[in-house]
Length: 439
Image (tube, rainbow, N blue to C red; front, top):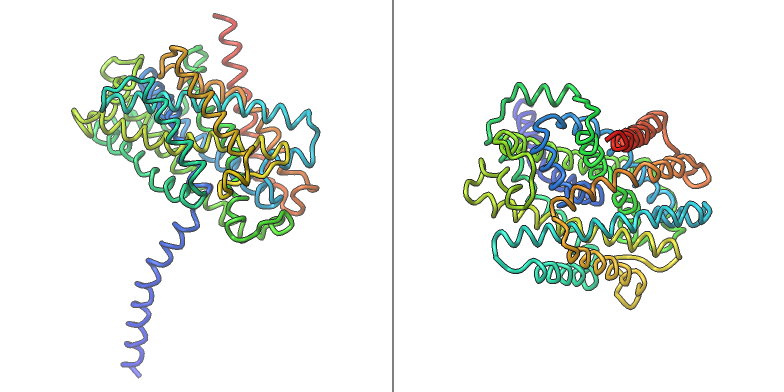
């Protein structure tokens, strides 16, 4: 009997050892749209904004990482839930259940914000490559735009999803740089846990930029549409097959979005920390170029900081630009009832891919206006911060509409956190505008 008990115990240990890797693999395999969305949120616009925040204000905005995590997690889960329960993207839901007075302003605002964001991100990627290879920026922006469009049009959703997951790893460079900079950890902890508020115009503008680049309009539309793509991948091709979601499916989506948003906030926290501990500490409070921003990585890479910064910015750009132009295409195609899927061939969804091409082309042309790339990244985030609040109102109304969501409307906790995000975004934007008027 004792030997039998021992054999069973050993077998149990062996099974546990085998089960652990399987559980880990299954956990990562279930991470999809949420992880990609969270990583795409740390796009060149975000990296530029966080770098400028750390350089100009030091550690004063570190607390925003704590504030925004529950807000963005809740909002992105609601967007995921809308896509899963309705079987449609956000614009498709607005087209079916709301008037054009709601649909077209929402889609129009997204198009404006995303197209500008595409242009600034491509410009930032070109500046990063220019740190390594002294090729004229105008040639680089054209080459990057063509490459990204080619991958989107002739690739597939599955291939893009795999690429996007791997590209997220490039962003961990900022974590290492921040730690190796040896910042004053007591001061860092204080700035993290105790919010610093100021009515200074520069501070409020930076705050709106951080909120705008973190809780961005394109993430709302992308998240819902990618949940639909996931269902298509499972063979649910018709709307009737996709409608509805089990609580188990929603639980998986919640984990996915929470992990993605945690990853996003972890990176943005350490970008601010790295810039504050290096650039701000050395008196470089006004970043004007990618080369200056790269100095935030000096503690990790020394003279190779520019190289590391370049790879991080290029990786995040190749992750984010397809998400930006793709969310434009989803929104417009859904608004007009056109076929839209990254798994479709170009001849099967002509309008969808045409929007991707046009959005990228217009974004490309923005780079020929002579705008400073770092300034463009920052002000793109500010624009997103002004556009996001009304879109958040729409998301809250849709996700709590029983005609659309059935019995999957928002819980009390989701309502509280969601409307808190709306209130905070509106308050920051209004405060910024009022401060501008006083200056």
